[in-house]
Image (cartoon, rainbow, N blue to C red; front, top):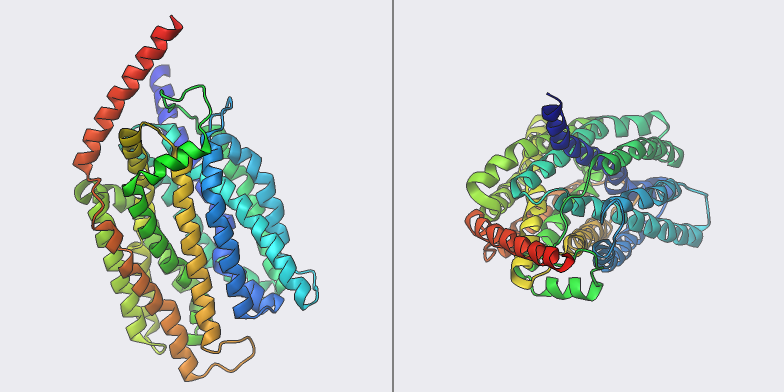
Length: 461
């Protein structure tokens, strides 16, 4: 009985810990992705053009730094493993910089811009350090491909639960607190405090068991990690698709509040519509394992992105005077078909094993770093594009929203993401890591690991 209990604990505790870590980072990312731009324009008083440039610059910096952080993770050797220590070491910086970013010290115009740049760059780097180590961790918890899918599904389910709750309560909290800079600050402080024990749960409950037998005991050079990635065409295809898909998602998430308030003119329904999206997202982890089992990651991502693009296109075609119920239903499907983000995490694990099979190096940190770079590039493009187009079409705080402006906001929030989502399908067409191919690669890698372990044992003897 004790052995069975221990077996269950070793099986489920990492899943719970990994899910908790995602829940913790979701508290931080939700405020950054959904409310930071509105905080800057409507509470601090920066123009959309200034904010769009800020988003672009910060996320390009993130994209450049991401592979560096991945290489650092690959080269880390500690009693806690490669990835876990960075959850612990990065958390204090994430908390402090999150509080500072959502603070308005009423500086002058230039001072506000400078303060925004300094704090937001710091916050993004701290978040990326924690988030990259979290994403890479799944590859060192287990070598079993199906268990990695399960871990990512638990992770996604946890994030979706938090997103549903935050979508329902965040805007009402901000409105209750006065809808000013102080309201955003207090809300953010509450969220960042809650994230602390959740991220720590991941550190304590997730144990790293996978060690690359070919590099055990020696640090992986960053140059070696990056060289192996350049030779990994499947990962590069996944990166391109991820950039376009993330740009589509962020361009909408970063501007959706403008759509609810000014295009639909139903700010009272903003929370309900955002919850509909998150309910769709909540169902994704329960569907994705089955989809991947039957369609595989390639066809799964192609079909999901195509259907997501259709749902976005329908929202656009309904126009600013759309029936609210139709908008809620369609938004649910936009969330439900946004499966490719979760699928790409599992596909990244396949690319890591493919790289090991092809180049003889397992580089989970650098590989996830490159995927993080793709996400950051997508965030840069999407965050900049949405706000840039709003500014280009004439949106400004305090200026009357005309019928033409309502149409323009609808185009920016729905049609532009639809186009980007359709484009994200194209790089997956030549992607060749099917389920059958991965079975062959995993078997070959297991044989390589066994031989390397034998040689190490012989050397020690």
